[in-house]
Length: 594
Image 1 (cartoon, rainbow, N blue to C red):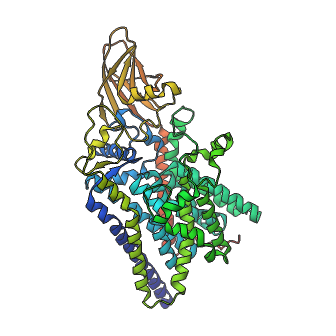
Image 2: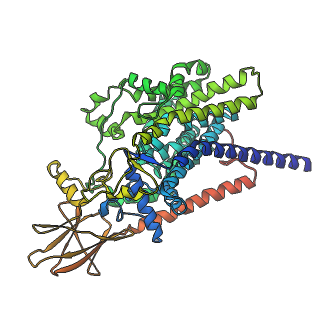
Image 3: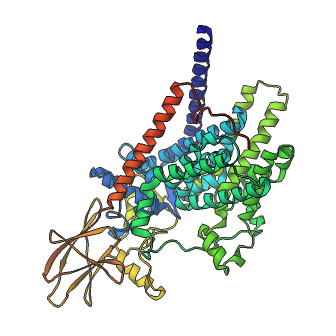
């Protein structure tokens, strides 16, 4: 008995050593992937960069004032009180904001970027290990999936950072779905945890994943014509757990977004590409364009059949990846769907079909890892396997830096033309604006390049531009008089000092009004109305007025936050108890037949 216990302890110790080794290797790889970016210390901004950098700046300044939660934009987004923090998840921006307390703004971003490169490596590895039980394949998958050009395009080139973060958790989501739909239903929490982490990252990714999972479920029902009760229960439990873990994200949508006529990005099908337009940049393995999936993914699409033809499970994964890859191009007649209201309402929310590249990269990386691992294991190498592994990692470094060369090219092209502070004309951030630690704050003197007016209220098309401009130009409307004013701001609060005459009854402030917006007039809480601009409007007879606008979420928000924390704590405690008892993370229930 003692010998048996000793053997168990030895196995656990060896497993711990193996895990620590793989974590160390991934940390080392991440360091190599980011060290040059840290050394350069400059960024050329474009696309969604100023939107996310402004969000992080708001969180950072609020944390500096010892305010944990950020609800509305008071310091950034031209002090309009826009609620993109309410309706666009900001959970994973907090580590970036916290890094600002120890590092300069450029390094803080690059370290944060590196954190998610590392997380993608680790989650990719352990997800594939659970799926395939092969350490070789898991390591290969983690590398290929992490440095897939579309992933790098999202993170370090185009700064589409919500989608970049969501990409990290896709392997976990589909691993959980695999277990719920086909394999071990005892592992149903994986699906809930994966979906929750997606909800913390990027809501549109949740919608896309939902569409894909529905298609997979329908495919299972059509092919196998059964979905056992235990799988229905596992799916139901996953949904409930996901709601508990992410309810604090959902509550503001219910209380302040639904049925409020708030503007959101327009649906449709834009930036369409032909198959040839996908193939050409993919061959060059560049991240300079959203159409590139990289040479490895492209070769897998053409050659993957050879490795999967004998295995139904792997064959299915390959076909899913191939279908998603083709669906990102005009092989699917996206343009013709623009006139179909049903399809437009369901699928049109994705906006850009090239977004499917995240998912084709996931599935085809799985097939690529299968093929490469088979070649590695079945080939008689002249050198020890360790040298083969080192060569593979070194090749990944070459591929990675070859892919991100456009990042450095853009910095060089800027020719030291660093972003200067806007002189007060309030224009959009110049494309490819060059920043370093010294001029970083100049970003916030400009309009956000894309997304400045997201989550304003909807206006008639003929009035939208004028209303938007009046708001972000801080124009206070007093009857027929328009006054440009400079507010005093603090965490989640915007204060205007307004001087009016007797004939002017209303003060129409350039601060967006939501259901849980609160207003104080001269120190007293007052009711307000929503103006024709969708902003706060108060009535007063006094000439000199101090109007403070803030946001106070519903009590359900704080209740949901407590529920979330308790649920995470419960999951952690359950996992710890199972580890202590020597059980698997998700239980040791009997294996279920399909």
